Length: 167
Image (spheres, rainbow, N blue to C red):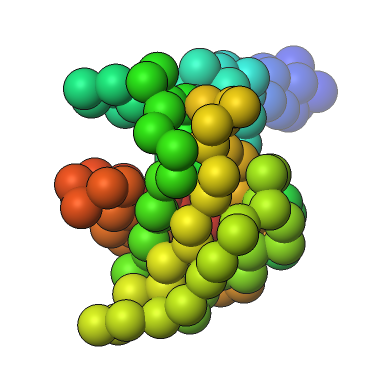
C-alpha cells in the first residue's frame, strides 16, 4: 500500500511538472512563431530591394524631357549609379550637385566625361557635350551611413532626391 501511495504521488508530481512545462512550451512556441514571421518579413524586404538593388529601392523621377534613375537604399562603401536620361538633349548640359551631398559620397566615374567642371555657390557643376547622347551616368561611392539629400540641378531646374546609406 505504501508503494502504491509513493507511485501515486510520483505520478501526480510528474503530471504537475508536465503541466508546468507545457505552459512554458506554449509560450516558447508563440515567441518562436513571432520570430519566424519577422525573419520571413525581413527576407521578403531584402528580396524586394529594401537593402539594395530591387523593386523597393529603384526610383525613377520623370519631368519635362528627362528621367533620373537611382537607388534609394544603398550600402556604405558600395558603388551605385545615378543615371540621367535627356529626351531632348541640347548641345551642352550642365548638371550640379549640392556640396553637402558630395561631402558624403565620392563620384568615381562619369559617362561621358565632362568637358568642364567647377564650383560655385556651394555647388559642384559638370558640363557635358550631349549632342550625340542623351544619357549621363554618375558612378557614386557612398562614404558614410545615414540619410543623403541630393539637390540635383539640371539646366537651372532643381530636383530633390533622397537616399539612405546603411551598413
